[in-house]
Image (cartoon, rainbow, N blue to C red; front, top):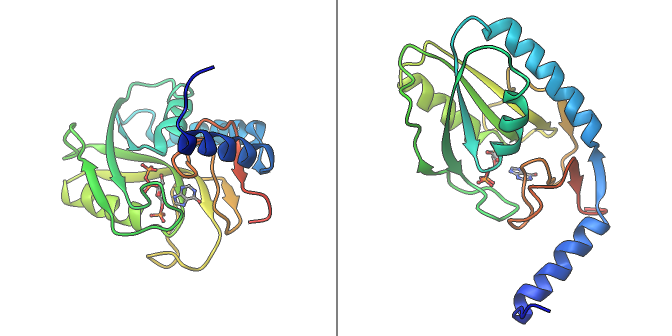
Length: 192
Ligand SMILES: O=P(O)(O)OC[C@H]1O[C@H](OP(=O)(O)OP(=O)(O)O)[C@H](O)[C@@H]1O
Ligand code: HPA
């Protein structure tokens, strides 16, 4: 048996229990269908525009990967890392860890992320893209959390067909205390 310090071991037990008792809000099959729809819409709108897709790390990683393999047209891929939760369940100030490398000027830009919660992250990224001179900016987000605390009232992603209730969710790229981004669906801790 490997030697784990008690803190790590406790955390392993907690994380396993959390998953064993989670509520599944959206199944993997539903996520897959939503990604199929998103891919069809994006293909219709951007299939002949040589767009650049920017994955918002870390949460956008899984959605970006699953989405891109559904797109049968030429495109470029880059990433940026802007974070405001940093392992916590409440968002704070936005911290830009990594800026994108492929220039946005004159390009059709697609921002891909996992969740639109309060929207401060997406709003700041949209400002960045416009200032960078993108020809068009569209947003593809896996899931929109339902509440009235959006940073910009009425803020919506251009492509998004899943909604979740106002609970802290995880899976399919979204973390809980840094873990379970790998969960194959969208979950919430039981009763919370
Ligand atoms: O709509 P908002 O309230 O701004 O929250 C949404 C953002 O929060 C999460 O990122 P996080 O800051 O947790 O960074 P991470 O992706 O590296 O975990 C998520 O991936 C979104 O980018
Ligand atoms: O509910 C959430 N879960 C995971 N990451 C998040 N980032 C914003 N909201 C959430």
